[in-house]
Length: 477
Image (tube, rainbow, N blue to C red; front, side, top):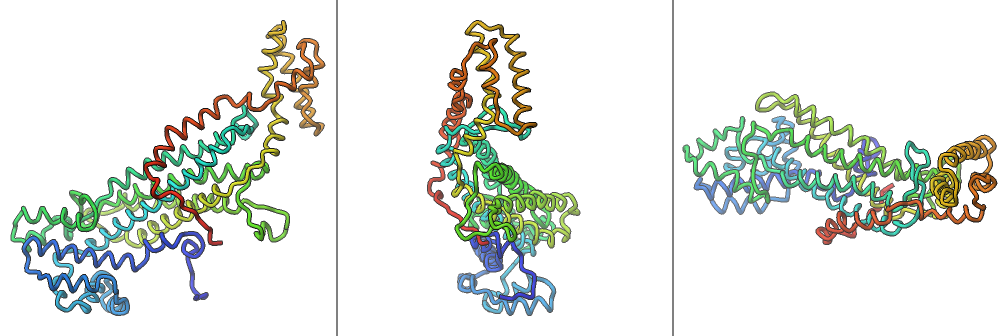
């Protein structure tokens, strides 16, 4: 391993080997060669003088890229596509003259970008479905466990641990809808020439419109796509890249929200992300258990959210049929967006699969606040016993302020129940009041909502994609 050059942490620390391969030189240049074969086969089938022997020769060297020849040639001609045309021709002397016939550089460059992004989107889809699967199991397991809910990060009406997880899941479900839509609408550029007019094919096929109209559909079918974009300049619209990165940014936002909640819960010691036996939480404080994984999710997510600006600006600033100021930006922003979201989803899988819940801490926090939240029920019980609702409301307000002061100013336990029991206006004993302190009475329909959400929304998704479930993720560092 070389240690004297910059190495991207996306490849060294965060992204999976599977996603790294999709954006590797091997994948790129093998796809270029598949596209050249598809073009040659299409031209042969439509009547151009291309032989099966030439096609077979191209196929024989489809995967053994002679990188050294291509690199040497590029130093001379300063053109990556023509360097690889030359290198392929060196391996295929019989087919040399028909490689890239009628095409422009974007035929291999842009079509490959679409193919690679589509494969990467499918891998993201697989991992996102598995995150939903892990969260579904978690939500179901803890659907009945009461916990403090928060508005403004202030204790509010209780919910359940499982119900809170469904809030994370619902956002991921929205992302899944967007992701599936974008995947379903991905199309190839096809082969439309220098400015998208197919002028070179009009020349090659002597103006035969019927044959020219078949070129793009035939190439699309050979490359596993339903169709090509009907019109283009030299490139496919860079709006496509914008749509793709926006989907990734949406997933990143959902992951960030979940990771933030987990970090806050870990601060409260209610829920904790996985912490390995020999893991060090802090270089200075040996006792610490920092939420490193969730913090990494948040960090990478912010990167992806901001990265979505790159293709949006590129799309907005393209000139007429094409400019090349998109190229260097695309080489960075598209792969890095995918590598980062891949790392995020692996972290989400790892965290959710190993989340530790501490019911006793959750109950302790709940019981410290529950008297305040039970005051409406207490008031109703007192009214049933003959009390005046308006008078009782004022007494509850005054006693709550006193109990709050006891907690915040004096640092003592919440004594609201004792204060109410001592007030004759309520006519309730401390024993009666303590009977109302069962947290499950205050979670509303949270358990039923979890069941309904899992059954009606999540279960159909998991059944549809049952063949890809079971994905696990180990984080690199």
